[in-house]
Length: 119
Image (cartoon, rainbow, N blue to C red):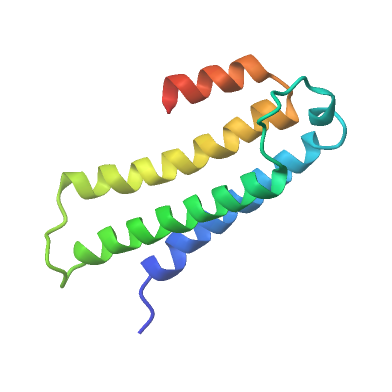
């Protein structure tokens, strides 16, 4: 028997990763390279590796939480269950929105404000 959470949660993570990557790559075509960046700015390969690890860890943590609150799990599903899953999805959407603002629309200050205000 396939559990729905083992498909849906990883699919959300993959969709966010693909959407963020597509939005990021559109801004890397010249615009980002022309920006004045500090000398300690890591290369793109480091950034993409770190984000991949973060998304994998977020997915694992939500799966562990979901399974602990499954119908036959240890903990009952309560109001917090919905809030935590909602925050997982909201965080995913905000990650994509930040990539859209920064790399696609080149609105650095709005992207920074969004990260500070909502992060």
